[in-house]
Image (cartoon, rainbow, N blue to C red):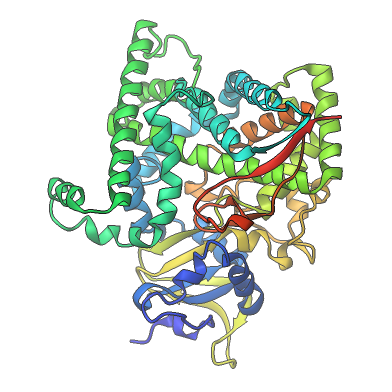
Length: 518
């Protein structure tokens, strides 16, 4: 029977077995390919992926609303995504489905409430101040070229470790080795390197029992595989040790049973919430360990990408940087370290963050697969591949993969206007997020899909937003950032910076000139 997607237009394959896969995930040229998809083909595009698999690339707002909200129980995480995260991180929100995922969200949603974010803010300020002092100490000649990403990454990791786990990784100490933090930092670059091969994990996990697969992996003579085994083992062992110590501390302080409602970190709040949960709703330790690893990995990588991108944009746009510095400096002069409400409501800081996260979402795309046959409606009808018929809805068979183009909907001119691909923080000033966007976008943040939406939205987006704004407010008060060498931002499952002239796409770095703010 003919695949219904054959009537949907799309680009020709460039490989008999990879189809358009290499173009979709091209780390250097992917930007242009994704722009061509939305400008040439419209809100839905047929893609040929591995071994002829037909997938639907989606930027149409109504289609996205059905995928993320209205029919979210039909559009499930792909087996690749679930299997990968289960193997490397354990049974976290990133690797569970159905009722197990809903159970986890019921326990975890209150943990990430705004009230708890208020309580976590004082934990993060000393980390931001330490970051600033380190950068200031390096300005021996008034201006220095510094790899900002190195230090932002350390600060982001320490922030999620202390705020999330109540545990310091000593991330700023260059001379102190910490196996836990080293493993976390190695994971993203290695994932990018092994991205193609990870597509076959759902098939590999069916090959014999876990002990057999483990032995087989250990026999493989590939350095990347051995490194991945080391990372997985180190993260699991370290998380277990942290959890045991946290539980002992809470029991000693008689906090775990809920006698004291205060929580000094996210893990403490999770343990207390889990004790209060009833019967089958309680999470096993394997799930809590999975959440710990997922928070560290996801919170560290995406926040690092976001802060680095904002600093890079500010370096390229000094007039915007000056205006933002004036705002945060006046606020800090009056209040010192800003409380949650003051920090989150600084208008120009908020505008800079919203605009950067709209135009440059750290995660540019995600995938879903259909659990059953479903009809996907379109807000913007398209011409069929034969150029004759108009398509207003698309029939998708069970087990059809769809790609949610976050970057596509965040940059669509039909949504944001003709200046959609321009970085213009002022578009958010004195205008609500809903008014800036011309159509409904089913996201939880700023009428964008940067943090997704629906039941699988980013649970820690308020923590991330708070951390980003805090770091910027502290750094910009004393430091000025100027462009260094030309930077390319690679596009894959995570946006990361590299030095253009180096030709090295695997070394993530963001060298910027830093001087004293005037």
